Image (cartoon, rainbow, N blue to C red):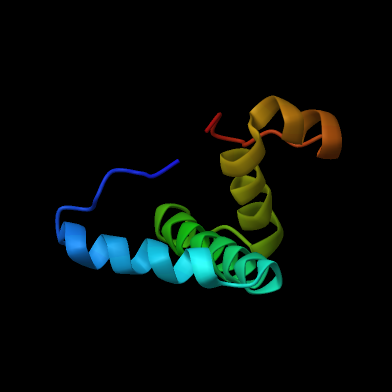
Length: 86
């Protein structure tokens, strides 16, 4: 399933990108997914550091887990709730 073409990408450029992905070996695709997931987590952590400048790394990682898994899942798995309810 194709996503919408980003506003800064021409349809031709988008087609080239999808052709490239179609030719990739499954292991290369998996590697790319891992890299993109790691990048997204790093960006999310940077945002959390900006919003909670006094928070220590364990709290930031729990807040990241809340973003990814939901507050109830994090509470059930780790027994943690954000002190501010976020």
